[in-house]
Length: 300
Image 1 (cartoon, rainbow, N blue to C red):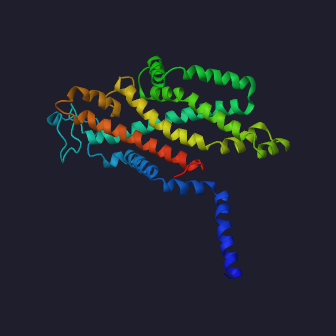
Image 2: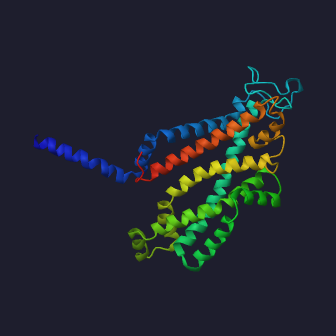
């Protein structure tokens, strides 16, 4: 082997690790693409998001328009998923229901991220009495089952989608606070944090420029998975009559009203149930894939 070949081989060997060090997000994307389960979850979520965005274009009927001539009609060419007890097209209601489920899930998680990450960052960065006080309050919230806590909050605030989003945001705060606190504690001991402090950087600058950006990975993973939990919780609350109110095409409410027709028209409840299952499954698979891609110790 000639000297030029040796030089080329050495350069090729050392180039890839340097690229990975310079581009951690590109490295994460490559790992994500290798995970088949994550890709399946991504495309499942992408399909639901696309259907929700273009629901007005795709839906063949008004989701709340009643037609007493086609009550409880089985799936057909005119009504792909059939009709419900008021003759409303279930396919159109599923499309508009995707908008509601995604909105509740995303907004609820954003509320949790805003409050939970803020409290977790303060607790982990400053420690001391602030850490003890915040974590004890989080322990009190975590002592209650999540769904029961959400149900109690909605019972106090009253039924409705806005109150459901608030309830979901509140019961998810302790989880985000604990995850954020753990990530901040591991980051604040790094050398670049000590260097920033020695150079006179303020606490706010260190937190927003160094601490939060370097502890965002577990928050991204948790947010994806909590969207699935939020959608499932919202559907459960609507199933009990505490969430979206009729005639809003919410999947949990559709599943609840379809219980009375399980024998004569099972499609009225099974189709919304399948929609909930596949959307929750997609977000969970996507979250698992992001966790594996963001953790270099995980083997694909």
